Length: 460
Image (cartoon, rainbow, N blue to C red; front, side, top):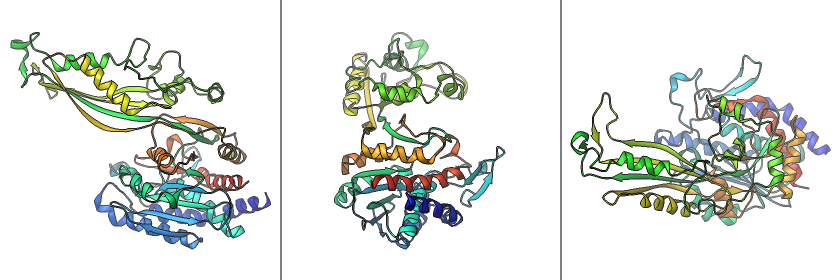
C-alpha cells in the first residue's frame, strides 16, 4: 500500500504535466472519417509511440489498410497480464459554428456551477479517457521503476469511422496481443460520485426492407382499393412486430434470453433510477417496452425491435394523391445474452414474407450484426477492479449494463478469448460527438488514480 500511496501522490504532484500531454493530443486533428485528416491520424499515432517509448514501453506504429494502430508492450514484470484498448481518433467537429471555442485548442473552463472541465474534441471520447490509463502507467514507472503487472496497449485509429480493420488486425496478431484480461476506458460512470464497470452490452441486428408493388406510382383515384398499397402493407407488417404487452412477436426471438440474475437486479434496484426522471428528460413519462420489466431492465437486459426510419410515396411540399410503387423501413434489433443475430434476421424476413400479398415482393438489405456480450461479475479480476474503484470514489462502484453496443468488446472476446473490464470515467453531460465536448477535470485526475489502483489490485 505504501507504494500505491506514493504513486497516487506522484499523480497529484504532476497533474499539470499530465494535462499538457492531454492538451497536446487533443490539438492533433485526428478525424478518422475524413481523408483530409489522414496525416493528422498518422501524427497522432506517432505521438503516442514516442510518448510510450519515453516511459519504457516497446512501442510501434503498425500500419493497416486504413489508419494505423499503436501497439506497445511492457512485460518486464511477472504475473497475469492485461491488454488495454483505446482509440485516438475523433468525430468530426461539424457544425463548427456551434462551438464556443476552437475545438482543437483545449482549455480548462469553469462552468457556472463551479465544476472545472477540459474542453475540446476528444477531451472525453476517447483521448482523455485513454490518457488516464497511460498516465497511471507513467506514475507507476516513475515511482517504482516498473508496472505492477505485464501490460500491453492497443490504440486504434478508426473506431469513430467503423473500425473495419480492427477484426483482421486482432486475428493476425492474436498471439502477440492475447492477455489474461482486457481493459477499456471508453464508458461512463453511473453518476459523478459513483464509478461503474459495464458488464453487459447489447448486440445488434440491422435490416432494411423494401416492399414493391405496382411497376410505377399510381393515381389513387383510378387505382385506390383495387391496387396493393405498399405503405399499408408495410405498416401492417411493422405493427405486427409487437403484441399488446410490448413483446416482440418474431418466432424464436426470445431464445437465449434468460431472466435477469436476482442478485444483479437487486444491485440495480439500489441505483436510484426512475423511469419518470429518465424519460422526463426527453419529454416522455411512460415506459413503452415489455410490461413487467422496469425501464432500466428494458434498456439493459431485454431485447428490442425498433423502427428507425420509414419512407414511401410523396413526401414533398403540398399534396400528391398517389399509391406508391414501393415503401421501405429500417429496423434494428438490440440483442441480449445468447440471442443469435442471424436467427433474428431470418425470423424477421420470414415475418415479412408471411404477411406479404401475393402480387407484392420484398427486398431485404442487411445492415450489420453483432452478438451481445456479458462478463462474469464474480470473476476475481472484476471483483478486484470494483474494490479498487470503490476505494477511490465517494460511493462504491457498481456493475451496470449498457443499452448500446461496443463492438471491440466482442471482437476481443472472440479473437483473443479475453473478458474485458469496461471502466470509464465519462459523464452523461460530456457532450461527446457534439459541439463543445468536455471532460470533467476531477474525472481525469481520479481516473488516473483509479487505473493506478486497478493495476495494483490485479497484481495481488
